[in-house]
Length: 180
Ligand SMILES: NC(=O)c1ccc[n+]([C@@H]2O[C@H](COP(=O)([O-])OP(=O)(O)OC[C@H]3O[C@@H](n4cnc5c(N)ncnc54)[C@H](OP(=O)(O)O)[C@@H]3O)[C@@H](O)[C@H]2O)c1
Image (cartoon, rainbow, N blue to C red; front, top):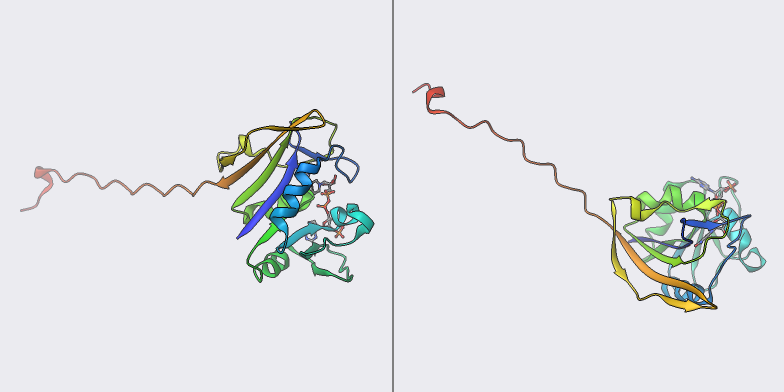
């Protein structure tokens, strides 16, 4: 199954100038726990924001870029389809951003781990507002907690199953319609 993981501010902003203006240790820990041993799908720009621009240890790093990049420890993917194929080779895979990668990969995800950070720094990158999208519903929500005076909350959203098409109504047969 393909999952997504993201930390959002009050306005569903996720970053500015290529980085996260407010980042919480608790969120980093949760991210590490959930993604350890899994594959992650990451955009070329977000990879550049990792320490030393290096891929994450202990995970298979599938890096989306149209430039055909190659580096130690990464699995390059030049398209969404290539990324999805590479992820399917692993039991568990997470889309880990950034904004453009979330946008193109979200339709392939069935669940989204969201950390809601109760702060609103100026963002230039955003995640789609799942609360405003009837396709998504909250399956799990932990109690809010605090770090350095900033409140945050861990949630898991799941995609609502598509509604079944209503059966076409058969017109009722009237006695008078009968030929016999
Ligand atoms: N809050 C969070 O949880 C979180 C998590 C991750 C990132 N972020 C934030 O997100 C922001 C970065 O987002 P971003 O949108 O600028 O960058 P990004 O999504 O990390 O990377 C963009 C790059 O990915 C490649 N790409 C995207 N779509 C592609 C496709 N369909 N096919 C092939 N390659 C594709 C392109 O690379 P090429 O240009 O090489 O072709 C594109 O320039 C930063 O502010 C970062 O801090 C926040």
